[in-house]
Image 1 (tube, helix red, strand yellow):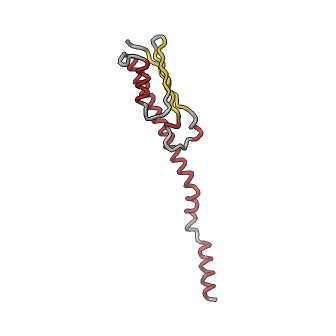
Image 2: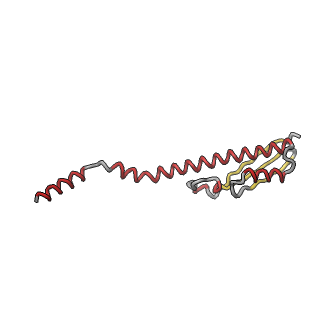
Image 3: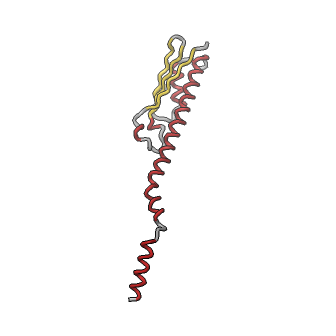
Length: 135
């Protein structure tokens, strides 16, 4: 009978003990925190890639504008080479009335690192720039 009394006392004491309650809540919230972390990494990568694409397109426009890049095909090749680590890059360059019009499209799937931006994965990042011909 003495053993059962000790066991009963032990079970009651552990039932009232709340020292593990925070662990359970942390385990329940951990997936949400990890998803938010992954989402912030993906959004950061997309914005970083967007600024890099803008820089490359503006460099090509400037090269065409001052005559350093001679032809439109050379400009397209330069965009493709500079953005070679992204798959599915599509570029279009036109010169209309001494204005260089450049459109570049890159799929979000090649920009996102972890894939947490699922609703945006079928979209494209579009960069459209214009610059006057200076030569």
